[in-house]
Image (cartoon, rainbow, N blue to C red):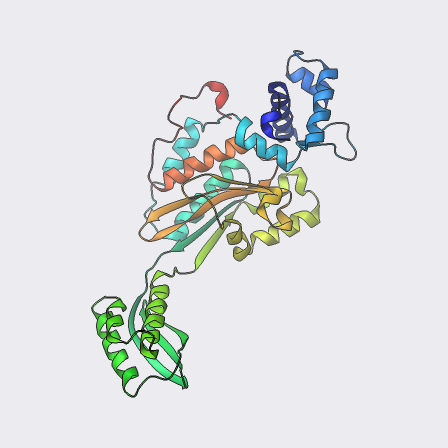
Length: 352
């Protein structure tokens, strides 16, 4: 059944269940919901609606409780359609602005500080992954024969580095073609030009034409390649304050996951740039993240530096609060103010 089939009453009951569960980490019963709604809906009616929400897969009944808890599907509907917008307080805005005023420092110090602020504001572990897009320039190419029709291409780069690949051609190069190719290619590289200008020097389909095409692709790949990324995790111990991770085995598994930057980096693949990304439980595609959510956004600090920063915690996170703090910090990192969503001013009840 699709979310559009939910009545307004079901939506409000689901919203109340999720927000109560986020606040208490305890399954929510019909009597509590009746009290929360001010008695506008009877307990019996709420029980019927909860039964239907459970059949639809939005809530579930924990094995030892008469109350209900949200499922990942319920959280997804809440995040997409039901949660109210939350605003940062003036104190939080000032805290972030003050902490990031000295942004022009080393990247690792900046992201370490930003992650610490985010963890403090959200009460959950904060993660940042950063990569310097330090473009490499190929200074020189060398060609080394391996066997007939097969050659090693070796590229020397700046910043200093050596890269190699194997070019497999349809046949051997004619005598002198390899040396002539290297001379012409290196002349173009010294001028800062690509190798496409060499294409007209070779007969189409010839081994030399194949070599030029392979070399051009090889040089392009090197010069587009990013440097390796770094990861900062702050507030990992805060994970242990969530009832979901009182179990030592679960906590240890997720903490070990957070220490592996390759696995965390994999969570950010196929993310939506310039948008808030919210991955709930099974959506993360990692078994250890089945009961956890990852809220993150991309940032770009200029100077060839970009990455993502976000929060990992239980699926029972306060998504609205964490999203607002994360966007606030991301904009602060990039020097973008105003902080608030533009169309409305927060009231006292919106600051949470």
